[in-house]
Length: 312
Ligand code: 13P
Ligand code: SF4
Image (cartoon, protein in one colour):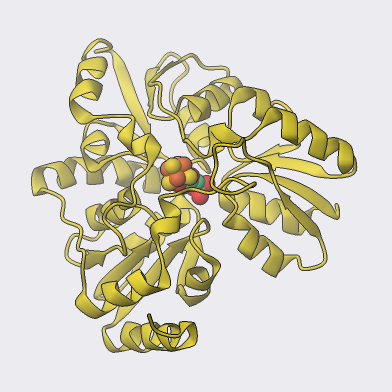
């Protein structure tokens, strides 16, 4: 293995030489975030993927994110550091089972969270992310019947916020549902002055205690803008890298995970599959590359573009 600094320098050099753009989600390793041309939440990342004029998109996140970039920019080469970097939400909705579920509700439209496969996007009418889900549901007529997939926790949060009844697919993020209620209560007792902020993929009993609920970008903005000095953050721990960079004088504490997680905080095992070495190899060999069958891509693109249009 090469020295970290050498790897980072070579990644920067190859990126320029190959006219590649590195897009990274807040949950990937801090060194990768520091190398990225753009770091953001799922909405910001898809907007960047649609707009870039680079020849190659290197997506440091998980598979569905690279796939979304390919759906939006089919003429570009889209590569990701590890093809096995999946997502429990995307895995929770196999296309055939979802198609059968959808068939039971013929008068419903389908709003799907972006954390799903291209096949699910193709079966959906509108895609949403955690930053625009409420707005998108609210923009539809009150009597519009809606299936919301695949994240039931985000769905319940949106239903509560909008007062709408949503038919939910029962998927969940293994990371966000693993926040320990017991340990969180102890932490809040230790830091009674702390604001508790959380991502809407968390369970209802966790969200009901939060002072603020939002996407990763919204959580970051909140920490920057609020005058408070201490925050307990209920989302994947990768977000702490940017938070600590942007508010170095505030105390940022990750919400505690149960014993099941690999660390005391919440870590996504898929996001952590992105390593500097794999990123180097991806730029060097220009693979693994993402491909989406054109018939699926065209249908998936229509539902993602509807979201981008509604998010302007
Ligand atoms: P956002 O960054 O859009 O809030 O998404 C969070 C997430 O879990 C991505 O996998
Ligand atoms: Fe999927 Fe959850 Fe990991 Fe995000 S944090 S990629 S939703 S498993």
